[in-house]
Image (cartoon, rainbow, N blue to C red; front, side, top):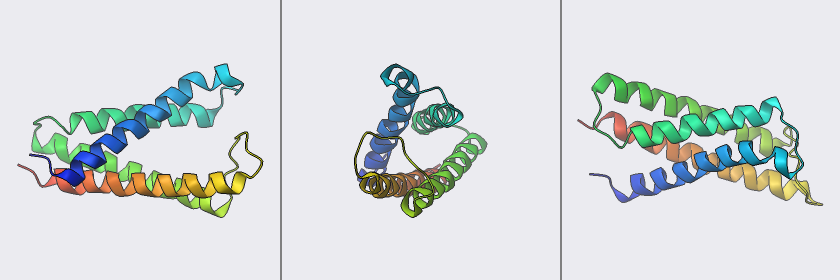
Length: 128
């Protein structure tokens, strides 16, 4: 049985993963170029969505531990994304006059996503 925190984490990560996939699909049609970063985010979204869905099923212990390890690795990537957004290393191509607010918002969302990934990774690993 899933507790409320795991339910919120699952919903957040599904939405976050799908937003990466949708961005990768539709970015070229809204004026962006196909870049390696966009392909990376599309791949990240596919992996995040797939792992989050698979963790909802009864799986063998080895499979569950592997999926939790993948979530942990994605959390590390999200924390890295938060750090480069917050520090201004990442320059986001957004149509806003003040890109600083977007960098701070993106850093916060990446950090919250990393926390939810860790909630699922640590919580699902110990389930029978």
